[in-house]
Image (cartoon, rainbow, N blue to C red; front, side, top):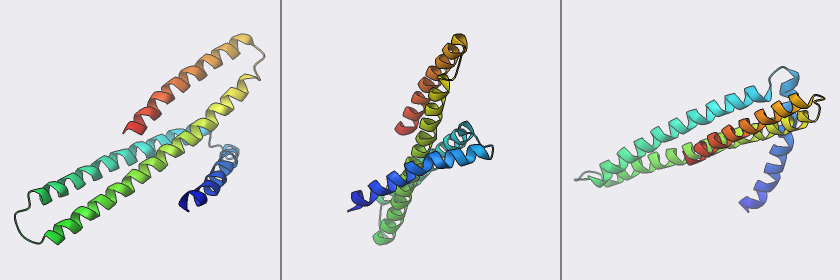
Length: 147
């Protein structure tokens, strides 16, 4: 059931993404600026997720070393940490997805702009820069996914 609801939502989000980017361009906010902001947001979410995982690990260690007292209280604390970790992971996944969305739009726009060059030298230079940017982005997004 969830998957059936997810598909229309994804279509709506991705259909609206280009409209959003176009609107932002009109007010002077470029895709590259959105990309930078989203990368920073994703990195922050990853750092927070790592910290949350450390907190959950500390709670787990406290339960493992349990030597009496209220086991249910320990369980509740551990479960709360686990729930927070799951939430942090979802936030990270959403932020990485947002980075991918704007990067795809930016690279698509760059590719389209290549066809507008009349100078072969400028076309070739821009095409090389696009390849380099895609390569660097690929390494960045791979690193984000692993984290």
